[in-house]
Length: 237
Image 1 (cartoon, rainbow, N blue to C red):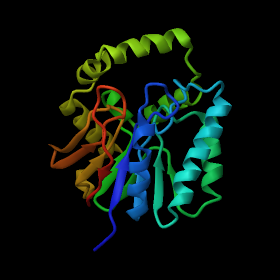
Image 2 (spheres, rainbow, N blue to C red; image 1 turned 90 degrees about the horizontal axis):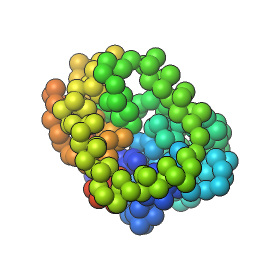
Image 3 (cartoon, rainbow, N blue to C red; image 1 turned 30 degrees about the vertical axis):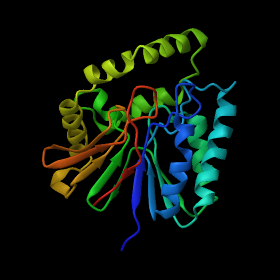
Image 4 (cartoon, rainbow, N blue to C red; image 1 turned 60 degrees about the vertical axis):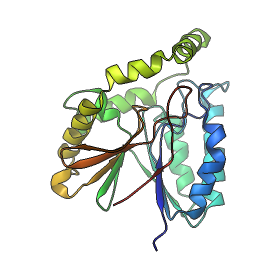
């Protein structure tokens, strides 16, 4: 029997709203029995980091990643960037670190494995997004700075009152999200016509499994934030 593989995204580590620390044992347990593990973006959160500087967050992120990757050398880790971890200083450090280990590869926008595609999902934020527009949006995030105390407090209020959950459903209804992702994948020739049967994505924080659209199954593990569902997703295909 083949070893399992997994997908996880949107841990938002170093944000004070992230509950990812309570899932670290499960992450290591999954990695310990996997032959592949896809980290699907926003694993770290540079906009909302609690640490005192971007440099400190970069250092902490690489240490966290080294603990995971270094503890499970039999597992091939694939890191697909999201918007919150597209910080240019982190991307530089991530690519540098990946060259020092044999079981980590990095992908800026998407990864194809068999009949599955893995991407962060921020292509669903705009209609008819193309690779060039996505690149420009990521460049903006690459220069993004940490938010201050006032904005953090407002974000805390949204989470405490569950407004973030309602906003997610309004901004990212499932049918629209699935259609926009498929449209983007058509543009990069990685859609259903190229044999894609499963799409794994994050970003929307909306946990779903085998959501069917355009003959493709969509999977999302949600996010470890209060009021939201979260799971480590076994992959198929």
